[in-house]
View 1 (cartoon, rainbow over the protein chains, first blue to last red):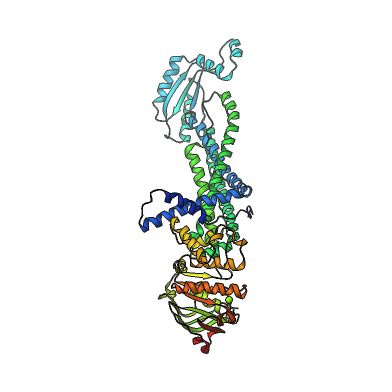
View 2: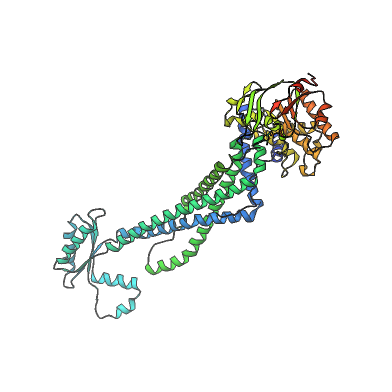
Length: 344
Length: 227
Ligand SMILES: Nc1ncnc2c1ncn2[C@@H]1O[C@H](COP(=O)(O)OP(=O)(O)O)[C@@H](O)[C@H]1O
Ligand SMILES: [Mg+2]
């Protein structure tokens, strides 16, 4: 286990000085006599606030050790999160490719435009086909020259080498890939058709790969999450060990388990939260760094694609994951080690 | 206030530290507990604090049978018993004020009451002027007095002290005893374990002598001074 912070280790129960300073300020105002119950509740709440802020302050008094822990947690969180971002972007990129799973039917040069359109209409009657479009030889050439950037070369060609195409859009969800393949073979037999081909296979392969990627990411996230849990747990364990004497005194003068636990739990939460923030900045940097490269690539392919970062919900989720793992880790350490410390 | 009925304590090592012990300490009393080292004095005090549980018999504090208190109720019991223990001294990473305030913060006192009570306790032990200092700058006798302030700040019913004058010279010891006497006079039941027989002899209070985990019969009534 990583022995990160043997020095920090002072979560500390609140010191009364801070409390009494607050009091005097409050007392100078018009203080109404509250009931005992709301008094207690107020004291409990202000105690929580105090423990929270003081455990953060204690972490900041050992900045090097704390930053080290935050970095470790941050990197462990950023790794799976960056994979999630990558997958998310791939999904957005391929989202448009559902419609790319289409059948291109290349026609013989002898087939006229009206005959080509009639063929399309006929095929549209089949339930597997939801839509078709006809691209004439001239349109195909125009599209190719703008997309390829070989416009001037193509202008020099004596005649148009591209065939007219009927693009068939398979009905989504209707029929399996095999059914479409059967259809493609049928279409291939038609006299007007030079070549019928389906682009669905590689899309499917890509989806399978992404499914695999998702699983790998989840497994990695689980492993690294466990790592964060253990790092926090171990750091808190060291903190507990170094405060043994103080814990004994607190228990001797009537500190409940919850009271003894509290500063350590808050320390764990701060570790997780800080780690989440580190991860957030790492991802921000990563996305910014990749954005330039992606923009260049996308420009080549004339796509509307834009690299997406975490977004608000993703950022919130990242921080929440950090906080929960920190909480879990400290809870682990606290429930394992605090009970054993008793005044002797 | 404190009642032992046939209490025995056998440690897991097999050693019998207390053997069928029965006695009572009344509400207004201040009692000395003496005996050789290893006689069982500390064990007796730990039973009252629920730092240990008896192997047999029962302990009652303020009418409450400690056997009936579960693990979760121990802290609340301890808040009503102030202790001055040799190996639970002051925390040197905070001021005298913060040391004394600890039991109040734990008990959930409202901040506006904490300062007042801490200063009252420090005033009683004569260390009001040292509240902002670290205990490390205080002499042994002063540290002991801060410990006493911490033990009484929560107005406990019972005050327990284990060798409170252990490292102090006779003059300072007498001062500490005077302090205990003052707390006893305002209604706190006081039980002091010590092997300093010379000191006890100068005090008019009742003394219980332990030997090998049992009370020495003759001693029980010697030097009785009620009230
Ligand atoms: N935790 C323990 N485990 C085993 N034996 C103990 C423990 N604490 C005390 N004892 C034994 O019990 C006896 C009484 O100890 P103690 O109550 O500390 O005596 P005193 O305070 O009078 O010196 C001693 O013989 C001591 O060795
Ligand atoms: Mg002892």
